[in-house]
Each structure stands twice: as C-alpha cells, then as structure tokens.
Image 1 (cartoon, protein in one colour):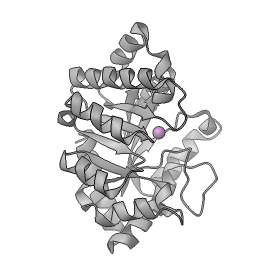
Image 2 (cartoon, rainbow, N blue to C red; image 1 turned 135 degrees about the vertical axis):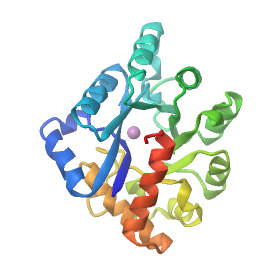
Image 3 (cartoon, rainbow, N blue to C red; image 1 turned 120 degrees about the vertical axis):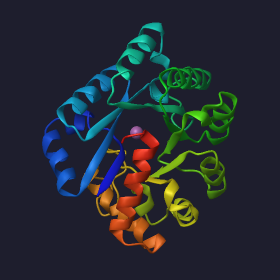
Length: 255
Ligand code: NI
C-alpha cells in the first residue's frame, strides 16, 4: 500500500485520461492520494475530485508562483473552500526564489497570511521551498507555524536542515528526484532520516522518477521512488509503503 502525498491530478495534462490515471494508481497499490489545490480554480477542481473518489483528499492554497493574485476576495473564497471536510491542509504555500514569478516580498506576505488561515482552521500546512531555505525557516519560526504541523514538499535542502525540521515535528516528502543519478544530496537525506519522518509524493505531472524521467508523471509511478527508498534503507518495499502511508495519515490527520 502506498500514499501519494502530493499530486496535481487536476492539471490540464490529465484531462484526456484522468479516470484511467486514478485507476492506474489503484492498480499500483495506492490507497490514498492528496491532490494539491493551487489557486481558486484548482481548489474547486480538487474538491470535485475528492467528491468523486472517497480515497482522494485535497489541500487548498495559493502557490508562491501565484502569490500576486491574493486579495481579499481570493482569501475569503479560499477559506470557504478550505472548510470542506476533505480538505486536509493549507498548501502548497511558501517561497520560490528560483522562478520569482511573484515579487519576493509579496510571496513572503502571502505565505504568512496563509499560515494564519491554517491556524484559524486548525489545519497543517504543505510547504513549497525552492532556493529560499533561510527565509522559509525564519517565517516558520516567526509565525510559530511549527505548532500547526506540516510537510516540506519536494525537499531539496541538506540533511542538516532536514534534521532541524523533523526535530520540530514536520515531515519531509521526497519524490522522483531521488531516482535521478545525480541526486546525492537528497539520497543522503533519505539515508539519515528516521523512517517515521519520511513521506513519498509524486508532484505529478512533474518530476517523473526514472525510468519515466521526462514523461508525464502520475501517482502509480511513486512505486519507483519507494523502491529507491527500500534500497537505501535496506527495507522490504512493502514495509516502506506501510510506514510512509502511516506517516502521511499522521501528517494530514487522515484517520
Ligand atoms: Ni506541487
């Protein structure tokens, strides 16, 4: 059994065959998927998915790329959607200083705002941090967001930073990048991290693991990432699936 803790099944690239992709996930042994709602339309599509499939849950957030769209209207519409019982986290939220699609100050402000919303709604957060490690940690400290519980998605930092994050109760999620030959840093993180802090995700349609690298990713492919973890940790694949699924349920508080 497996849990894809971060998917974008509402991405238009799944329009032609979304039902088949969900079936492929089931056939590959997945028992849970969390779909990430990024922006109002995507959150609405996510809610629809969670209504269609009992085993798909969702999140609500404004992605750092889109931080510039946040205003009062978006904020309250998002908050309303986030009250849906199948919305299990606020995310993905955070900072992306690689693409800088929104001004950095705006990204930081919208990140803080959504941490506040998570606090009001009593939800954990899913964090996107690309090339913004220091400010991400500063904002989490300053807003006391560690209390909320959360996940650093598509983790790309050092083991040293991961060690600090897990000590504060957050989870580290890894995806297809782990299977790339040059991924020494993330392999080291997986080698060091205690199994009870590790989550698996696809971030599909992005970042397909080897041997599908460069193709459209989908939840079923997460098994390749799980196999890589099993190899690094010296554990049976089923054990990796069982433990990371249990961790995901705890992180998103899915009973
Ligand atoms: Ni994502």
